[in-house]
Length: 486
Image 1 (cartoon, rainbow, N blue to C red):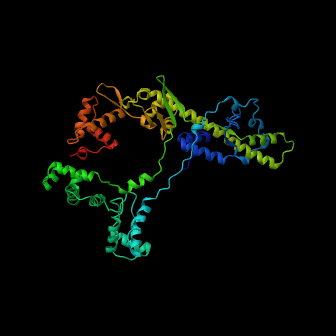
Image 2 (tube, one colour):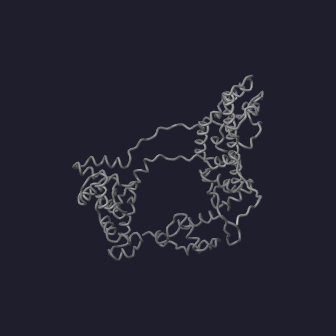
Image 3 (spheres, helix red, strand yellow):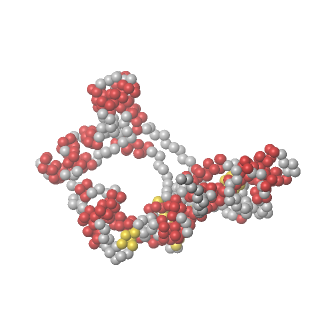
């Protein structure tokens, strides 16, 4: 049975401008600069301020538009041209100082053009005397090596791929022969199928000695016992002293488990972090500044103002002029909206970071991580009167330059836990203490999670063993057995 109902409900919708502000807020400095360039390229009515141009929007007194009108429905006779023209005798830009310094300019630096890891391997192949078919197989093998330096495919798979993709018909014996050639290339260990083979290849390139020979025997015959650090079994098996075993293991520990990364890592361009904020200590007081690249001087194009003035003073308005003024109005509205959105972004970033700075003032004045207070997004949202999601957008991917280094904002947020005195302490403080305890432990007898829990309890932090295990994993610290050293 069909029925009709009349239902009233309240719903909240974000305006296009609010959506635009939220999108801008979540961008870090470099992404914001890119977004700014895109908007300027797309909207000819928006320009970046310089000394010769207006540095501020001269239309701040114009009426706000609640809805963005579709250009197809705009009636040019209803447009108030005066709203788009500035009648100030002294433009506002003349009363404002330029907050952009020449020191903030990005200076281009020459980019290195290094030889790639795989190209270097191919260059080394040229030093070997190979037949044409052998060289094709060897080059295919080099192309199959991953960035870590491993060739993680079976010989049979490689034979099949050579036939189907390269029309090279060969056998396993020939591929294995070419693999031996690849294994002679630098860095040592390249072309290995797994970690065990990678380490063995590197050891066999070393000058022979008693310790190298023992290390090779351990990796060949008791690799599992070595990875699990069952040193007692190895001592019993090889009947050597602890000192000899220690030196053999030291030979293994000097090896590179990722031979390819050592090469490619040096050739990768470094990504420089551009801090969005800077905190300095002046006369024992904290001073917060917003990166000037987050506060560009934007203004509406003077040419577009003149176009509107021409239309206003024209006695006869042709249909072409009416179409043009519709286009101009749309671009001016979009420019004004974007300028307002940028201003709101600046204000949102500054007030949010200011609240974080004052909340964590003890840390910023001292630099001791144990002085970081428990702080969640709601704490800052309540202080600045913003939504939690807005604070989250500010904290995400934003960096602040402090006297103690450049920090990611979300590093200052942490949950609270009770100490033995019932006081709230930050989980960051507990992780710092846990890390310090593990660093100071006897590596011959590393502490288990139960022992770590007891130690932290003695220090006033009653934490369960499973919580210790959780924090240890977050700190990327292995279990006690894997921390053991000879």
